[in-house]
Length: 347
Image (cartoon, rainbow, N blue to C red; front, side, top):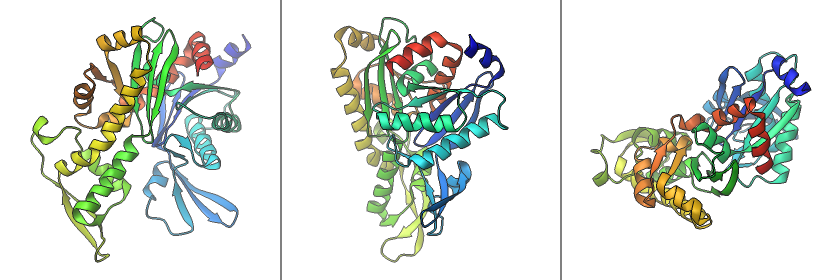
C-alpha cells in the first residue's frame, strides 16, 4: 500500500542498459532517453574525470587525445567497467527525471541472459546510488517479448530473438517464465568488425567501427544479390591506406558486405538451433506454428527476416519497434505489479 501511494507521486523508470544504447522510459511519459552507451573520461594517474556521456561521447570515439578515452562500459553483453557503467546509469536517470525527484523512483532494469551475481549486484548498487528506492531486474528476452506484444502468460511458446550490439539474446517464454534462454556471441558489433576486416582485406584500407556501422546501415544486406533486389551503387568510405599510411577513399560494394556478414548471421542461426534443441517438444510444436519475433538493432539489417526464415524454416516476424522493444516491454511492468513479481522471480 505504501509503495502504491509513493508511486502516485513518483516517476518510476524502466531502463534498457544495452551494449550500444541506453533507453529509459518514465511511467506515464513513455520513452524519454535514448543515448549511446558511451562514456568519455579523462584519466590522470588513479583519478578519473568524466568528460561526456552519450551522444557527445560517441562523437569522440576514435578522435580523442591519449589522455581522454571514449569507453563503452558494456561490451559483448557484460559489464566491462563497473565504475563507468554506474556513471552511465546515473546520467540516464538524471536525464529522465531532470531535477531531483520528491519521491525516489522504482527502477526496472533489463539484464542480459547469463548476467552474473556480481553484475546483478553492481547494477542494483548503481541504481540505488542513482536514487532508486526499489530495484527490479528483468530478463531482457521477457522484456522484449512484452514489448513485441507477445502473450507471455499463455501456456504456449513465445519466442523472441533480440539482436543487440554485443550479444543476441534468445528466450522462449511460457506462462510468464523463461523456459529456455540463450546468449549468442554474434550481434551488431560482430557485424561491424566483420565489415572492418572485409574492407581491409579487399582494399588494404583500415576503417573505424563507426564507419563500418554506417556502411552496414547504408548497404548492408543479409541475402546474396541473387536472392535480393538489384545491387545499389557502391558507397565510398574514407580510411587509412595500410601500405602508405595516407588517408584515402574506396568504393565498397554490397556484395562485399553481404559476404562479410554471413559468418555472423550463421552463428546466430546456429545459436537458435541449439536453443530449440533444448526446448520441450510441446513448445517446439507451438514455435513450428507461430515462429518467432526478431527485434533489437540488428533486426534492422535488410533481408534479415527472409534470411532467418530460409535458414530455420520457421515463420519470422520483425517487431514493430525493434530498437525500443525491451525498454517498452519493461515499462509495461511498471503498471502491472503482479506480472513484475512473477517475471523477476524467474529472472
